[in-house]
Length: 264
Image (cartoon, rainbow, N blue to C red; front, top):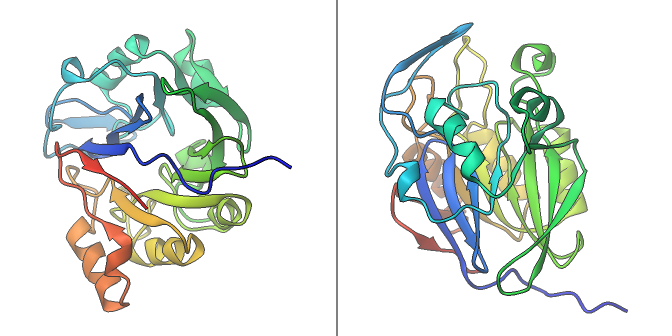
């Protein structure tokens, strides 16, 4: 019988840079989510997106990045001009299959449930698995394009795990992540983004509450809920919703540019 660890490494530090971009250090391994480093500006790419605030710091101030976890490449609020220019400087870039084809180079494409291994400087084996994501309501997939999240598991896929949702709403694919993995920390892309009208294409408070219930043993972190015009729910509003249900203690609030040690 294999002895599996019962917890993630104690030395996990998360720093919110802004929007969907966070630096996550696990056992000395530096992971960067969806790099968006541009200054405030507007983007026209079918739908006009307006960036309101810049990042806490720029790509030149990052430590060496072992891997970029890019949920998708086709939207400027997840991969902007400066973020795209940064990708070749990372040790590894993991994204969707179609995104890897578009980006080229050494970018690695993963289909949902496909996994790769990495080893931390401390010698810990981590398994990174692509998670399914749906970037909007049912039927919106041809418009939004492919998106994935990521599950980072210690030891093997049965070990304690960190889940990064990517741009998704609550749907059966997220519920399946909860059934398959022992998630102890869930980083949810929230903000209830509404770039095309009344429906939301990232998690709103109800979605995040559903996720918290499904990931019953997890600390919840909410990012990608500020800095852009199309977000309609703030991190503070999400915290109020959690408080109303008596689960405020489950939510760890991040401030831009402030490293936070996450233990559970």
